[in-house]
Length: 244
Image (cartoon, rainbow, N blue to C red; front, side, top):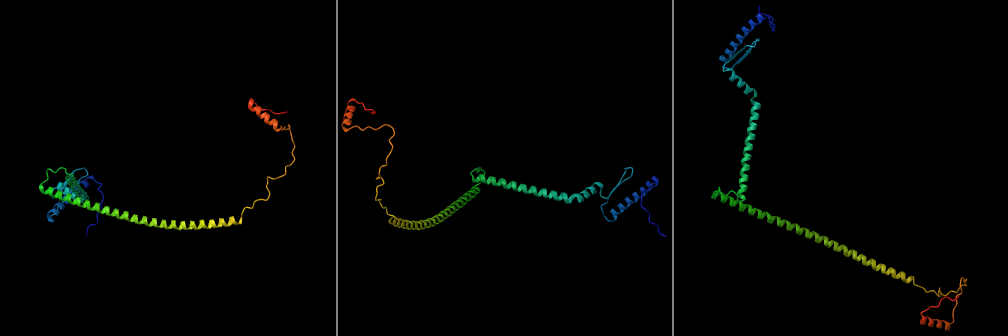
């Protein structure tokens, strides 16, 4: 008859618990050793008792196995970060070298720092300058041709607009002349129908009406008296007053 299944739980008796710990610890250490020898495996075993005492076993050394464990546990993320950092560092180095090369080339094109250059490098620089000058002249000529074509196109457009305006003005002038001739003919016909008829009687020739004399009576002197008075006025510079 086989043994029944033993329930795993904490042993309450302190002495029994210590005895069981010692037996099973030794058995666990033995099994770890056998596993490392029989299967050529790297085994590390660390045990802490309830009192805090350390028991360990390492087939290749505890520290070496722990370092290997840390590399296996944290390598995917760390290697990814490290690889990315290395890639960025290489990229920055390439960009920095390229930037320095471009600056050096720019100074050479401007005629600066030509002392360290050799004959071959100077010849290459001369060829680059000649090629750049030819391209600049070609581009300038192309731009000038395009501008001339644009100006010609504008000239043709303005000429067409001018022609249309001239035709429009001529048509409006013809209409204006027709309207003026029509207006003059209408005015002549109107004047011929409405001729001025002079009145047979003079409006100023009207019979005087009797009126009422108020105030003093105007005395009219005879012509002889008037001539005498005028002579006296001329001689004495005295004008005759009112005659009452």
